[in-house]
Length: 328
Image (tube, rainbow, N blue to C red; front, side, top):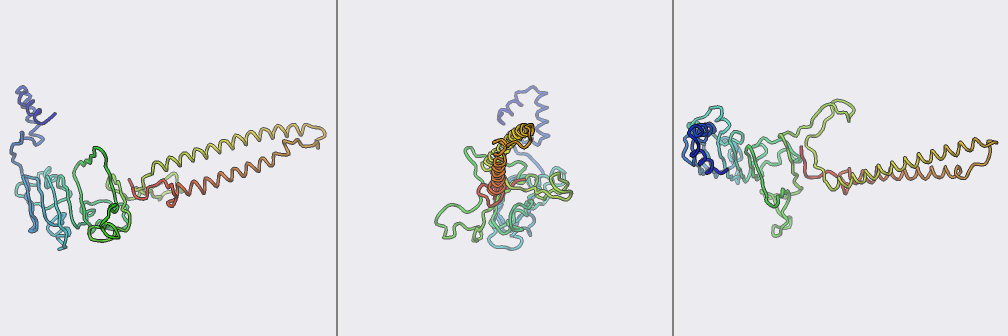
């Protein structure tokens, strides 16, 4: 239902129902209906000298330099060069407002934790630190430090592609950017393929405890682990099914041979004198057993060397884990 339809329904409803609906809207903070002006205790923004601010009520576009809190925060607070930023914010100090701790005279700084929603673009920042993010799969301690950043933060974030969405790391496939290809925002080489981490709960610390699969307590399990490549995993499962099927065939063949051996030996020892000539079937039994041993050894080596190396080691051509995409 559209807002226009909702408002029309209120106007056309019986008086008692109108009063109830209007009260509900007011309780939710909708007393400025139909786009009307609404008075509220919006805080005052502590503007830096380098910032140009476009604002209306509690929505802002701030053109300035990198900062995530007070005037002394971020790269701007350190006096860094080339750290320009664009900060789109709605609902400054929104979470604190619910506690009644602010009014129209409250002065607030940028705050990545109490502001309602923001889109932040910075030429040079330390975005992981600003957002309080858990350590991911980066090789360095602060890989986001002194790098450009674009961040979106709100209670709910949606990225919708009607046809397709790509999440890509690494250099662009393009020409005209020099012999070394595309560089990072500071002009440095992009030496490694950047990883992609999906971190639910903002926690990547390993879990420690008692596992039934380990020798005892104190074992740890990584919370952040590589995603599995579906096609490689499917091939591995198909190979494992084939190996298991071969094992069943060996078992069936062995049971059949044991039954034959039991039958032949029973007949042999029933013959008088007991040193009667062995039957041809008994004479060929050792060769048959030796052939089975060779087949089993071949299957074992194929499983332990071929399948294990190919699918379960990082250098394997069909390694089932992704080298670059991780999840909790």
